[in-house]
Amino acid sequence: MNRMKSAEDRSGEGGTAGREEPETAGGKVTTGGILRFFVPLGLSASLVSLSHVIINGTLARAPDPEATIAAYTIAFSIFTITERPAVFLRQTCSALASDRTGFRSVGVVMAYVLLFTLGFGSLLSYTPLGPWVFRTLFNAGEELLGGTVASYRILFLVTVFSAIRCLFHGIIIRNMQTKWLTIGMIIRLVAMYGLSLAWLHAGWMVDGRAGAVIFLLGMFVEAAVSSWEGRRIYRQMPERLKDSQIRRARDVFPFYRPLVVTSIISVMLAPSINVMLGKTADIELAIASYSVALGVLNLVNSFFTYAHQIVLNFYRQDPGAVRRFAFGANLLPAALVALLAWTPAGRTVFGLIVGAEGQLLDASIEALRVFVLFALVYPWVDYFNGLAMLHKRTRYMMGSQAANLMMTIAMLIVLTAAAPGWNGTVGALAHSCGVAAELATLAFLIVRLRRRHDIRADVPV
Image (cartoon, helix red, strand yellow):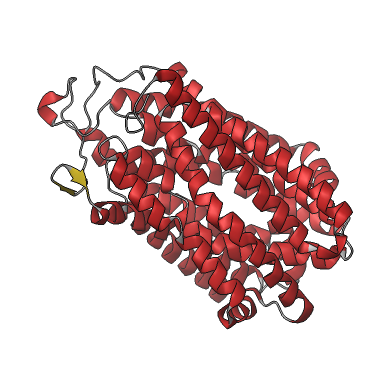
């Protein structure tokens, strides 16, 4: 469906969508219009890291900060896995909810997701399954088990508000109101910091539950802001567009299901890398330097993780403008990572933000230098993911993620056998090669799709 049609050309009841048209010049999308759409998305993604800074800063004041942070981190690791299906509601709603009927259909899918997630979370929280998982998968000892379970009993409830915020983020992004993602994130951080100060000032007991409650409040506030703006947009959307193919929840699942499977495959990457790093010459140094370098890489990449939304929202009107913007913007992450890896600025960042020094600092910088390949390739993976979503071929993302996992594992096996002394660099190179394989797979599938349908590059299937 051409979302840029005028209101008079749209069919269906309920009025026109409250969408701000992107700035154009002679019918073409301008770079300024894309930037006004993209920068708030990047800022909101970058600000997420401050949530964890606030929580860790609070937990660091616990009577036993190491054990408290460890218990919260273990619980949060499970939460991030079970939350992923809720996060994918953002892309699903942005791609499919062109009218109220489509939005409600995605809302029904959200209800199914929450029923499953809350049911699974309840099993982990209130049955022996939870302690068994925490002991077996995370090697949590008895001294951590109680705090981990107590933290997770609160954290799994966060999924409710995460799903709501992502659902409304979908139509907010689709209707070009991306500034509300940044506004919501800022208000969330203010609420979290305020509760943190109040918690410490009141002298309440600081344990893993404190971090979980602060996080729960933050997500509730962000969901409330997103819901407030999203409902305003929903009221202005047409009831049903004639050319929309989304009529019920079953129409959503072919798009949504592969995204969930993709996330399950991606979850296997981190443990695979950590296991194989255990076969290098210096296990502790390898795992620590890889983790530190990856943290800095993610800090840089976080701003550039919404390229797929640029494709979804602008490619139909002006594919040339999207490609030109991508060719310029997609070089920035690699340039920033290279700046940190080969200039004194990198040692300053590692020292101030991560606290790395000595041998760990040297090894982390070596790993970051290899991660330049990752930073160069990943934005294009996100770009082609956007094309896969635009063509309603999300199963391509499932195949490309599988290629990523297989290449990563293959490289880990080869590198740990051939160069175990590379330590953390082994993980960085294997991970980067995996992402390169993911890009190659996506590009091949998209090109094959276009040739099979005999379509021009600027026309989505």
